[in-house]
Image (tube, rainbow, N blue to C red; front, side):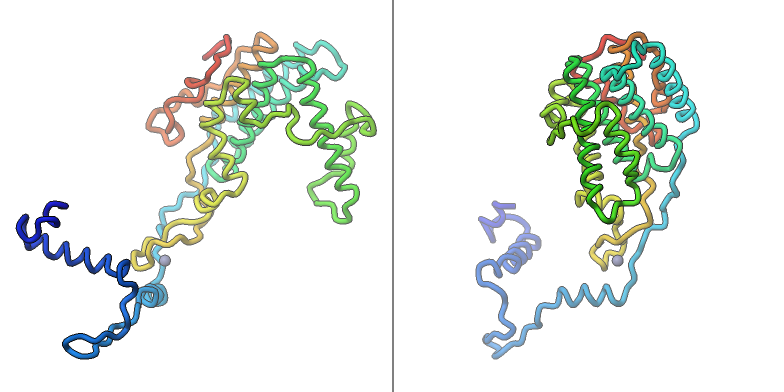
Length: 341
Ligand SMILES: [Zn+2]
């Protein structure tokens, strides 16, 4: 095409080359000469050019023709019954294992922390499976929290030092104390805050007058660094950034959640609010993989615990819930020597 322009009019089919060059000239001349004047003087005298009318055209189309919205919205679906039965059974098994491995009734940061984090993630998974949230926006926020709990537990398990387990626990108490003290001065305490409960929790291990309040992250590392130290950076990269966007209300996640395209080409396919989006890919298979890895960590710290979630492995490849055939388990940097099922 460049040669046809360079050797014009000696090369190529002039029925195509000539109009292409003309179109190119028209398209680029405002860059060279600026906007066309509304009047110009030519051989034929003064010629009036029409004013720019592109915005007026689109405004007229918007005023005269309605939006076209797809009616192919699906209602939300509850999570599969098999999964919540399975998740409930594993929660009960973990509870039994908790009692079987309890060495003391004194505060035990390692034991309580390990079981607590695993059960916390499992509770989020269970709630997602028993509700509609797994393919709604809140499912993504739940998945992010499961990922964060996994990175925390894995970091603690890799380090496995009494001091770090204690830091994790005392940081949480300190943060509760901080939130309690801030709300104590508030005239208008938020409805969801139970100050009595908060005070009780903050005082549970040690009277809060004696507690330090640590700012920043409890391990003095951000979550990415903790994932690096734990050897699970690849899992973190796959799950954390995109799911965090929903928790932070980043624009593309906001746009994905509440807007759809109007299908009318006369409206330039603008974005319009849609009914609550309920057809996002389910987070349940990914949540199962992450929770299983947390159970691996629990098994590593308190052997031997064999049950694992299996529901996600029964999904067929073409199932909308099994979009990703290669799970994070395959890309984990450091494999635990545990019972991979
Ligand atoms: Zn429209």
